[in-house]
Image: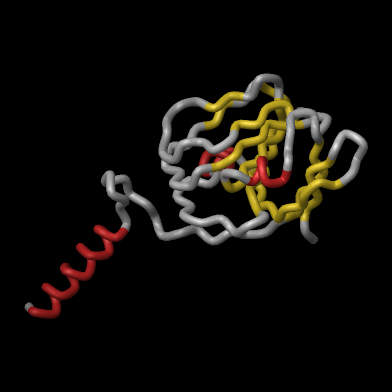
Amino acid sequence: MPARLLCLLGLALLFAACRDDSGRVIQTDIAFEEEGTLTFLQADGTPVATIAVELAETPQERARGLMHRRSLPPNSGMLFLFDAPDTLSFWMHNTPLPLDILFVSPDSQIVTIVRRTTPFSDDHIRSTAPAQYVVEVRAGFADRAGLTEGMRIRWRRTP
């Protein structure tokens, strides 16, 4: 009987540790998986900053995005790849990290930058023009790197 009680107590503590102060469930941190690199470029092609990226290519990966991530390495982010351009909408549901979200046109031009999003918000964050790619980075990165709308991206998959 004492072993069973200890097991139940351990499970209760584990469950309690998976909630934030507001009672939202936060899963164990999901490790960043580098799948490529992405470079931000000035209009003349001069590199501004390069980050490691995890790719969100499938509908399931895009739906999950950076949800439940409690950390993201410096100079890293997630690149969302869509099949066709559209006016895209994102939200911060179950996302504990504040992010900068960059919407990118099919020709790789940054069309919208939304800085310092609100964690766990269900508000819709929309592109102002059709986008085919979205880059999510830690909040403040766009300002530190001097990113502006009109700049471009170039990315490649890591072999």
